[in-house]
Length: 375
Image (tube, rainbow, N blue to C red; front, top):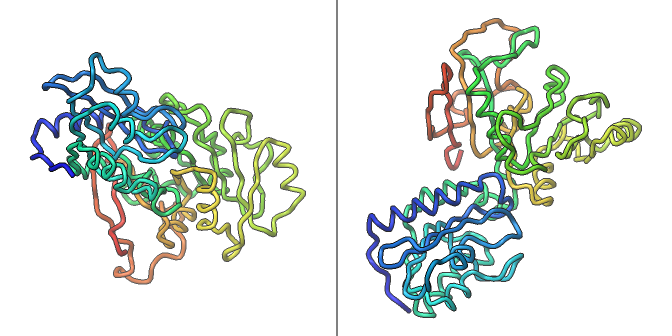
């Protein structure tokens, strides 16, 4: 087994290059991870590549194929461990061994049980020097969706809400256009573009009649995101904009006891209908996440409304929150809170978050946070 070398700042610089390449395919690779690869020889970058979508060549194979000279004795930088199994494409670890690459620098181990260190072991047994863990936190963060999906079999759930400083998403009248400004609304469309699914409840559909499409930015994939409506009793009108014909499927989720006649009408209008067991008269969102994962949908963007937000928060079924705060105070006991529901009984019961990022978008402030582990 070959020895590891000391990692240098130059290694980190090339790993950053691989991360930038990988991120070019954000929203396109699901259920696969985003992977970029850079080939370096005598401190010269001789090739690079990134994985574009599931079923197409992996980043390592693309970089090797594109090399302007023989890759023997070169160093390969890749943000995720090369695969060691036959899936939709041949194993990259075998290709690397055959190519004569001298050293491989990896950001993080692939958590996929079919890989999980096997690619590293295969390369080391062939005499290749392998260093693992360069900018590992960055590499794991880039593929947070993949890591959740591949280790749990469930989609990564992001809760996104636009609200006033006093936590309101709409006035008592239901008016919500627009709480935040242009830049924050563009962010919302970018998040849709990067997600497999955008999900709302029927109340939001009834008040806003949204299309739930990607408009302000270029879609990452023409068939994403799928639009999912939680509607336990199938009361969605067949004329709803979300049912208009388009490349993205609309799924209405009901409980087992919902009307079969309404299901027929909605299917005729273009919707797909799936059912879950009833949980206090509502769709069981945990069962729904399992059903979505079985369709290889690895990321879900929850856009509301307030009762739906509470369902995910109270049951600990979210992985990240993105809250956009507008510098406005709405007030009023009947205006709509961003997260409603029963609420927790004590401050000690509240979901604890770790703030990862605070950014200014125009006049608005966007906070990205994650639930603390164990909470």
